[in-house]
Image (cartoon, rainbow, N blue to C red):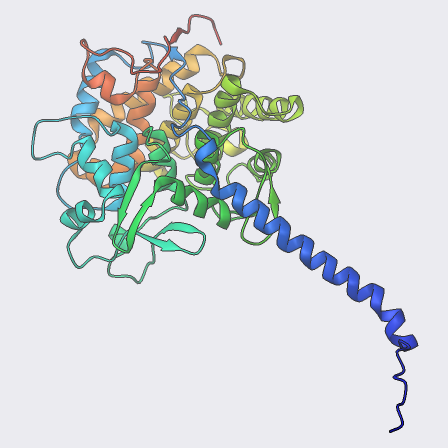
Length: 413
């Protein structure tokens, strides 16, 4: 039998193509390895502190709101146990915290509100047994059911991206806390993991994702989202700073809140570059100066704050807009470093107008706009150096564990 030798010569065209093929294979292998590595790093949250960072009030300025005003306001702002609405409850939990007790069945106490978000059985007890679950497991973690205008269950959905997660962080709920879901058990860490996996630059809403990252993870190393994009805190800061002032939820005020929360935590643990820190301080200082120029003589702010001019048509301005903008601005300013604050008289005028407005609003208006108005009530408490549940318990209240004494603001700034 005649044996023919096999021709093993590689064709010229294949020799020329081979380096490109190898390069593409190497890139694919590298991408897969990086994605796996980053995913593992994101999943391994056990090495991080379980308890979120605390951001405590900085000042005690009685001219903003008196003890008597605060007591009357907080009495009116207790969350009703009727007409269950997720957006109302997340605002109520954020304002009152998970431990407040009212000893009155007409109002929801802190443990009940917290259970609504962490235990599906408690959620169904308040929202209805036929209501779709608030949270579900996904491939990247846990996700909240998003609000949809045409859904018959929109009242029990999450209105904003990651606001429920940020509120759990603000309520000092640890990452290891269990979540009893309808499709199985999880942890708050799984909710955070899902949020970071979905996050990307130019996301429509990112304010609460930034707050959750700052409170739970900062100054953790960069991570990679589910789209393979590398992300770090410097990019997060740039995203918060680069958008035009009115962009974002509540006319841009939640972006300012995210910046002051991140800056306050950076003071505790470090991590921002000096350049990023200076950019935040300059931005907040510039906004404060615009607020000085845009304040109405009565003390409130409106949407005209972004152009640094006081409102010119009082008869066209709703009480809702005035309370929303004034409350949100006073809230982030209460957590801002002293070097960026507007003068003391500006804060006093804003606080006194806001206190009177909350006391004079009728019950129907308070119920209709409960969510935004909680920001106003909380802001006034922060300017007295306490969270609302602590103010409500005066004179017996003491700083919560981890709190630090507030600074009395006596200078002109």
